[in-house]
Image (cartoon, rainbow, N blue to C red; front, side, top):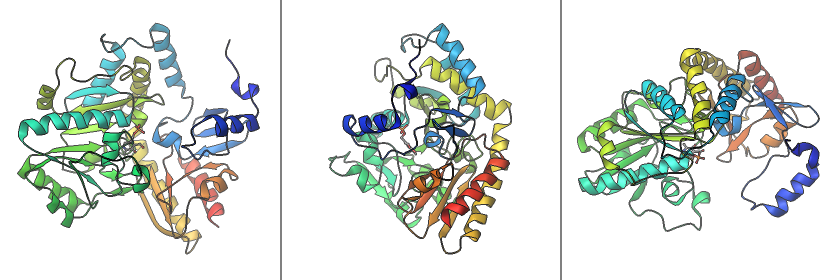
Length: 400
Ligand SMILES: Cc1ncc(COP(=O)(O)O)c(C=O)c1O
């Protein structure tokens, strides 16, 4: 018999337990959802909230998608977990779908999360660097790559790093999208970790000039270029991976968030020659590539490529950008800039943005604030023009 948690504990009891029993690492919303359907979440009273965060870019197909429920139920009823000591069909099927969508890479390693994918990639880089007599690892200002110690060495924000050093000594940060700073890349550079479109940094794509210069340096020095597609990947920008908008191509890709269809899953993708760096036993994970998560991920891939999902993102992405521009016009002086790439959007305000997520709840809207002045919007990829219009009307009212 299932336990109906929402009936067992009142909202006040849940909030009190969270405050007294949990490490206080999160600023939690006052909304306690009890269920979700499509692009909406619902609270106990049945109020609906248009979800423009989608679990931090995870729920590409929204909540309770019927095909994901079917795939997950079917897989769970066969087996939910085997360990990576066994080949299993959902992993192999999903790997095939991903490699078809990203022909630049030929090998996969499944993980549980984005951070675990970044961490494994750092290990690959270290092995490769030793073999090729290289040292430096480059990351960029405002970049986010996770919070374990290796990944945090790459993540830029001081508030996330405070008190956790020492970090990896070979990591150097250069200014994001600065051509001038690229002179920091030399023959000693082993790897460059790059978000082609920064997410946490407020939806900022690299310029074509920056991509071209990095391409030139990549060919000249032969370092490993790693695309962090954890937030911008899996269709979010209208291409499967955001690097596919550019001619510059990575040697390794890390991907997570939507790839598990709402379940924890990440993946490292690499070019064929890099597969030499790992032999049996040199890396591993218990949960990585969980069969149920892979089965859900296959539904996301199927939606993107067999049900016109990618072109849906391109079309609605244009409407989304248009709506954000209209918001700026309707609230003069409030919005400093509007940025959107596919269904990844940001309103940079002329003021602190941290109070807006709670204000938005009273209008039935779920939004996210990052980088102190930015409202970040990562709606489910299935969002339609009707809901984009709802977003526009509501955000105008909130900002006014
Ligand atoms: C670009 C990027 N890299 C890495 C991560 C870390 O991924 P995870 O939270 O799945 O460990 C995130 C998470 O937000 C991210 O946006």
